[in-house]
Length: 419
Ligand code: EPZ
Image: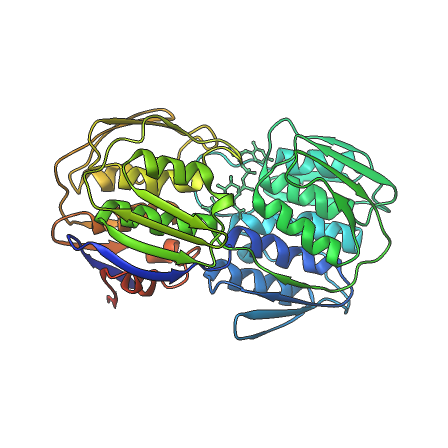
């Protein structure tokens, strides 16, 4: 098993290219089964979740091959409307194949998805969307079977701006007969990225990013080329790392416009942040201050995925920081490990109160989930001594070569193998 060894206490300096976005490449790969042609995805991050999605694509009948940072998906052949449970359970975003396969095959059968344990993660809004387009949905235990002679356009009112349910609704509606309006839709940049790809495939879809998405169904979609947008959560993690350790870093191939609440919070903590179109430079030389209250919300609010890394950066900030997690019920699973490094954190339900401490120390810790693992790495960079971070299988789901990235930024970080 891999273990990440980090020796903290040295400030960061250097440049890093921001990887392609996990939360964009996964729904885009699922969307490719809607097309009857060859799609090319460039700037694909090397992540275990992307590999798991490729396994699903191959299982349902697609030809998939890679070249450099590009993935080629040929979905022109016959497509199978089912995914094995083991592949479904590897991650949450496998559920996006529900809308894609139902639209392509008229039926689909699969189990509930897996993914990070962040509290209950029902799929009721995904099923609401499919039922709104006329699908017959049967839920039996942890299995979902859907059938639709032909999906019909309609109105989908999402009571909560679920990212996944919005993506499933878009994939099911683009080839449905007639028009669809999705109101209360998620507004994340990844939703707009999905719209851009679907439009390149010939879909008639508009409004992504506004909360109301309009779609006029078409009979067929062709393959298309798409560059994956930069990963705003990976970028937020590297910036939090620099806030925690101190120093000056430069991130390129980034998209500052997608992560304004994170940049504002880092500025309130005393970091100097400069941005260009695809560039972010962060410098932290003086003491950290509390960013004040942080409340996670759907985009354009403060992203829940950046909550753990920013919490880790605030551990040594002067003052008290209150973090309220409104998107997931149980997203403080990284707190006990941070406490074992000397942090002062109290939690009650969805609220965490972080009192800044003078110093942190290295420890042997284990990642409980993807962003929780990132938080432990961020804390380790600001701690005295060595930290051994286990559970890297969680981290590798969303970060391409974390040890290499941190080393490029001047950290003392090494990935070691452990019996
Ligand atoms: C996406 O998950 C991201 N994953 C998550 O990133 C991210 O945290 C989340 O959106 C919110 O931004 C991918 O894009 C692959 P949701 P998703 O549906 O689609 C409730 C990471 O670390 N809900 O917007 O699963 C749900 O329980 C991951 O990269 C329902 O109640 O998120 C949750 O509390 C973690 N019923 C809230 O909505 C539903 O049918 C947000 O979920 C669907 C969701």
